[in-house]
Image (cartoon, rainbow, N blue to C red):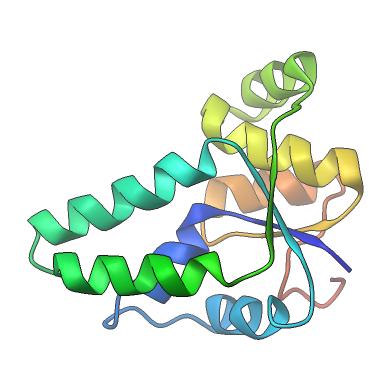
Length: 137
């Protein structure tokens, strides 16, 4: 079953010194299931990579290799958010509009959300969206 993939998970995959059970589970899941992401995900992932190049946690070569691997994964970009719902979720749960876009996408499609962001995870649970890696996913 498809799921929504937050950029925080992808950051964990890209950085060798990061390790998380949910990120590992999500990596296994994307081998067989499609991930859905809001359009801003493309920018978020690349920003994470460039920032970590500046911090000397990644090289340009490592970034390029990671992006090639990521391009092979089944990631569907959703370009049609429900603006009213995104804004409502951001306001109600004190999320950035960026984070609310992941939650809106998961809610709209009735799928689980894979995230390492605690505030986004709490908002997901409060709105009835399952978190990948939780017992109810």
